[in-house]
Amino acid sequence: MITTWEIYWITRLDIINVISGILFIIPAGIFLFSPLLCEAIFDGDWGEFWKFVRKIIAIPIIALILFIFLPNTKDAVAIYIIPKIANNEQIQKLPGNAATFLNKKFEEWIDGMIKKKE
Image (spheres, rainbow, N blue to C red):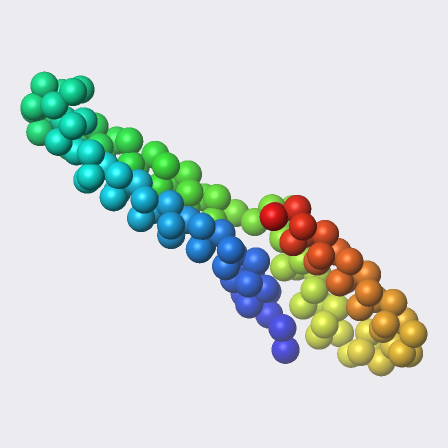
């Protein structure tokens, strides 16, 4: 039985992968260049520098969290409709030709979603 929770997390896997890389690169870059940034911008005042870093990092992290967990329209439709179709006994009893037609349409739709994300 397919659940909306499973479909949701499947649609989020690529985004989670990209975001984890970004969340690694941002802090690594800040720590790598922190002496230069502190000296150039804040005249060596590390307290002010770290206040600035907290403000700068908080905004992208919040935005990225929202980006990860808010599905786009096609994802939301898929999350809502696919389990209803897959778990519907009447649809499972459709003749072979109708089921084949529906499978082709779903594959085209999913391929279109994948191509747009690439």
